[in-house]
Amino acid sequence: MLLETYEAKGLLTVTLVNGQTSTPGVYAYRGDLVLKEGALREGTTHDFKPPEALLIHAALIIENDKIKFINGLLPKLELLPVFVAKYKEDLAADCIALIYVENIAKALQVELEGIIYLLLPFKEGLVWNELLEELYIEKSELKGLSGEEKVAIAYAAAKTYQSKAPLVSFAEAEQNTFIVVKDASVGAI
Image 1 (cartoon, one colour):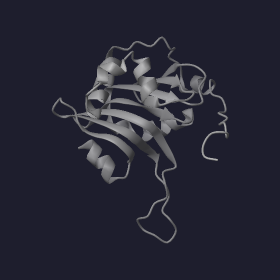
Image 2 (tube, rainbow, N blue to C red):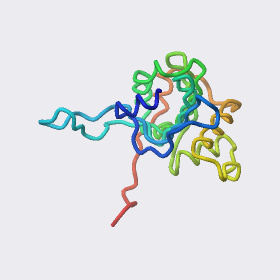
Image 3 (spheres, helix red, strand yellow):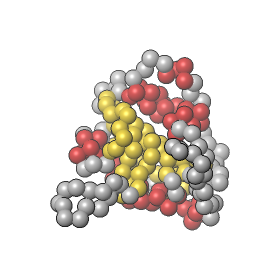
């Protein structure tokens, strides 16, 4: 199973949901997905530093050991090709990819390795809540459902979602990036 393989390789972190949906053979995951593993700690053979890059708050649907749906947050657009290079063999030909990106100014679509990625600007909040809003899913529709079923409902809604974002080359998408300035006034004092 693909998720078990990812877990064994240490590619899943901060896992919230990891299990089969009510449809046999269809699995859901929510958590962080590693894009770049951390380096080995000096003097060890199996102790790694934290990951260098993540797809944050990812949501996946896996069917027949292929990723059919992927959602999450990239801090920088330049990490999208990193994701594609690492996971392209696991993406289904009809994979639906809705990726939030912190450093883009407007919604865009790009095609990489045969998959169209809908890139959505992200300012703040929870990625999952933003996804539900984008797909017009009311939280009341999810009440009482398992985490796996909630991801399955998001996937079902994403299948019929139509974006008006223009399809551009990755180079054009890079021209729509900006430097993200984080407000240091939040957090513990």
